[in-house]
Length: 94
Image (cartoon, rainbow, N blue to C red):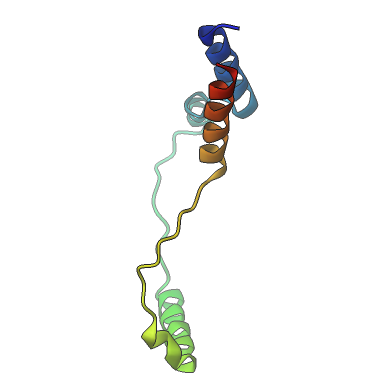
C-alpha cells in the first residue's frame, strides 16, 4: 500500500468510528429549540457548605500543610495514545 492509501484508510476509520465531532455538534445545535439561555444561579448555601466542608477536612489533616507540589506527572489520554499507536504502525509499515 502507498502512503496516501494508508492515510486515507486511517482517516476513514477514525471518522467512522468516532464520527466527526463538529458535524455532530452542528446537527445537535440545529435540532435544539431557539430558547434564551440563562445560566442557573449558584445557591449561596452550596458554596458556603463547600467552604465549611473544606475547612473541616483541612483541620483534620495537618500534614496537608506540608504538601509540596511540583511533581512531574504525564497523563496520556486515549486519543493521544491512539494517535501514537497509528504513527508507530505507519513507521513499521513504511
